[in-house]
Length: 349
Image 1 (cartoon, rainbow, N blue to C red):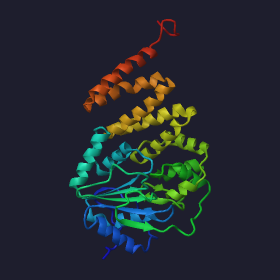
Image 2: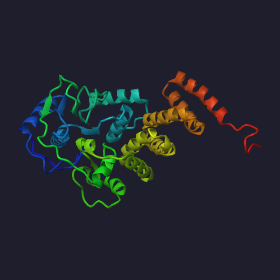
Image 3: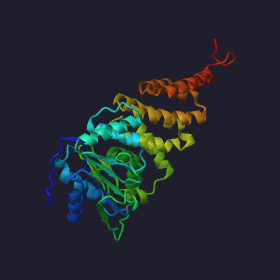
Image 4: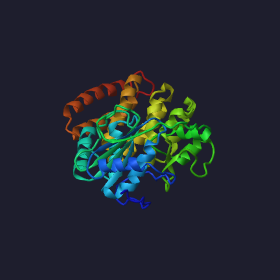
């Protein structure tokens, strides 16, 4: 028997999107998933074409069976790198992640082995390093038919008619992070105040008015380059909170692909680095430093290279990666020499 749905807030660590009150049916699929990963630890996959209701089913499942786990961790996967996902898991667990990416992944694997968590990975595009073992269970949603072919789960039929959504507000929401965004940010991009939750947005957190769009809506949305740039500019002006980090990453990836947006990319990187360092998400700070430094080296922006070189050396030394630290220290001396003014430069005294 399936348990009745409870709207009580999850008291354990983690996060579950608000359930859709219009959800109905799917009892057979919910029972398959319950048997696969609630009765015992394991991995289950919800497969289906765009718009078939994979995320809605996963959300309903997570809400119904949350009390069977020590906590539920919900992540939008997509194109996000492992270090970003690991940092968000640490945030949801209220667990400080101060190792490098590989050590953090190992630490998470150990936690998942000994604790009874449900990890939901939404919109997975390739095999993930985050799939749990031990006492925990993983639920994956994907449109990739060959991903984890042996895993049990549910296959959802494609809808007969895929609903079309358009308009300024839809485009504005689609320009934001697919992992979730503050509704106020979408309103700023649309140039209007948004009253209530506009269709087809899904509520992630009603208290903070954080929403997400179904992936099929993002896929069909018209997002001009100018709108993506305005999103990056708006994201850089927002107060930096945990809820804004996905949008800052989203904006950083876009601006790094646009040579004319280099200064904006540097500003976004500074915001992410400052916040993740403060929160103890050191691997994320390091990887962003690495990313912005690699771009700076191509652009011969020695000021940016020198800004982060010393911190990167300290981080590598703290992680016991001494050879990499020494190599970076040698390179940083060359960058410092290039940036030093020559006697005939203006301002030499």
